[in-house]
Amino acid sequence: MKRTALLSLVVLVALAGCVGSFGGPQTAASTDSPVTSTSETPTTEAPTTPYPDETAVFPSGPKSAPERPANPTAESVESYVLTYEFRHRYNELWSPDATVGLSEKSCSVRSVEEVQDGYTATVHCAGAYVNEPTGGPNSTATQHADYPPWTVRYYVDEDSLIREELD
Image 1 (cartoon, helix red, strand yellow):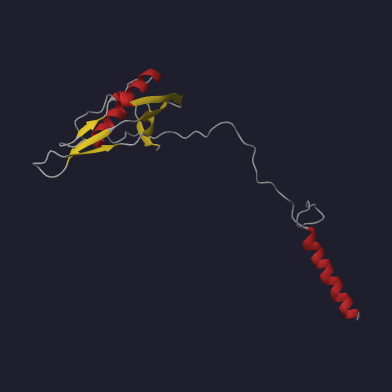
Image 2: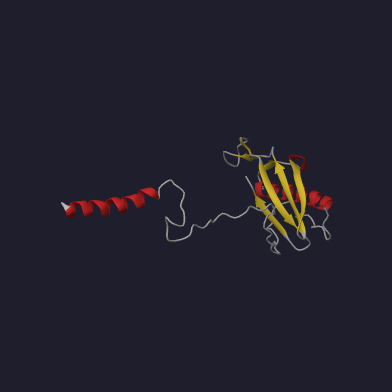
């Protein structure tokens, strides 16, 4: 009987230590290792990452890439990215037999912000379409395709043009 009582006491003490650690606050007495916090104080500043000196690939087609501003300002970047996006997308949609419905009025600049040594700009476009002939060389049938709206973010400085589609 003493053996059973001793064994029961050991099991009870062991379980009491395990059960006591659930849900209740831990203290230095209830654990051998100190409790540490891994949360950091949030900062309001975004991390800064330098932009690489690179130029986005401009698709071939009937429109040429506009000249990047030598000394970018918010106004020159706004005009530049609007023209660039229109010409870039026009060339992507273009084929010798197709009619592309897209103008600079299809796009608008949503924002231009000065960052580090350049500017970021967001351009939103909508209303583009393509009409392509179908049914062979002697057919007058045309296939119409509306292009969904899209948004693009640019980074522009004297040496760089980075284009990133967001939608």
